[in-house]
Image (cartoon, rainbow, N blue to C red; front, top):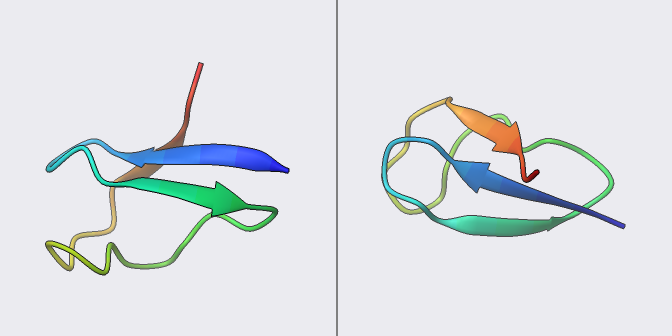
Length: 34
């Protein structure tokens, strides 16, 4: 299980796949959390 974070609004996502769009701000800048 990986964690991803939206670089624009900071929304966190857990899962295997990097989300295509942020459900919160609708941008596409998800990146893997370090």
